[in-house]
Image (cartoon, rainbow, N blue to C red; front, side, top):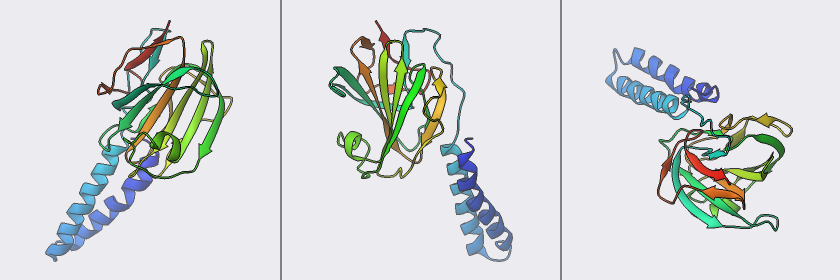
Length: 208
């Protein structure tokens, strides 16, 4: 489990155990204790952090998150031609985020914003997000941690200047969200909308 998860799981776990103790003499407390323990179990499940087999192919660009590909669209960024891949993370998906490709973090920009449902296209621009600009030998890659209607916090564990390996853990988004990856021309997209991907192991594109 991700370290951040302990502070969320511990309160309902302790409260549930106390309620069950009182529940030996009071049925309502026992029911409350069971609900709290189930909540603690769900939180621990949400913050799980499984190991992943990272592709050895140096040309591979991997998914930064678990979820479903929603969009693959032509989109320019700072006047440069490229394409954006958007991935929706349901509440039951692993929410630890990973680097899509090896490179050096040039900049991390936190943008406060709204909390539209993460499957809506406007969430890419208007929702709270971290925009991470990654310098690679093939050009700049940009990926975003985007909060959704349920998710209210984007967390990045890295800082500008850090060197990342493909598939390396970089942060998480709490409770349902979205991730975008922008790739410059020169990357061949190999996924399509509707496909399910796993962070760090599923290949989204390859450098040509």
